[in-house]
Length: 178
Image 1 (cartoon, rainbow, N blue to C red):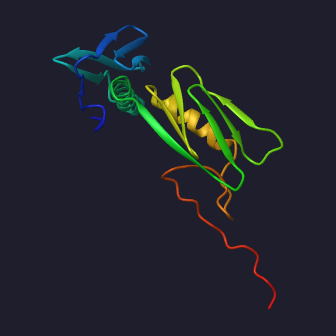
Image 2: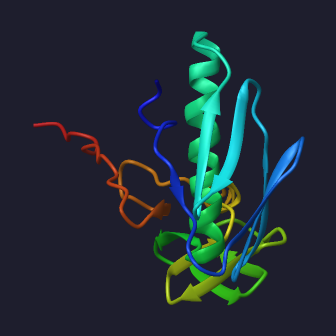
Image 3: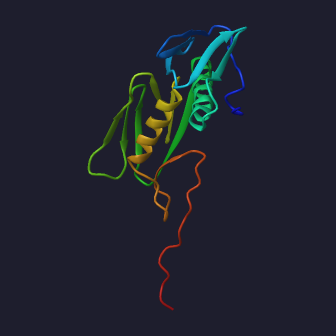
């Protein structure tokens, strides 16, 4: 049995779960998320817990079992607490402004770079830090990765956009002649 899949998911107060044929709807105070039903798994809601079982012991079914439980757990956490990722901009002359749905950045290019967030994602700007938040864990991670990809941190001076907890491995510059 899958170590992840066999654990029940606790349903906190204020969260409603609707199990359908093709998708499971999780609704809570921060929004509503749909989780697709994975192949060879069965999902039941009983005693304020979500229980995921698999139909057979094939290796693929075992993988789907753990994935289904993890997606449901992330959806429950997302509609109650939400997810967030923080990015930091480092560089001389780099600027950041905006917030809400759109931010504008000066990243050393000949033009300012504008980024508009998709529905369900909020961007907050604080000095040189961007906070990406929302209920859907996958969307939050995707938006953070897209913003980071606009100007990846370089290894010599560390200029660029990086995650707050990311460590950039630095390289030594040119060695001069002796």
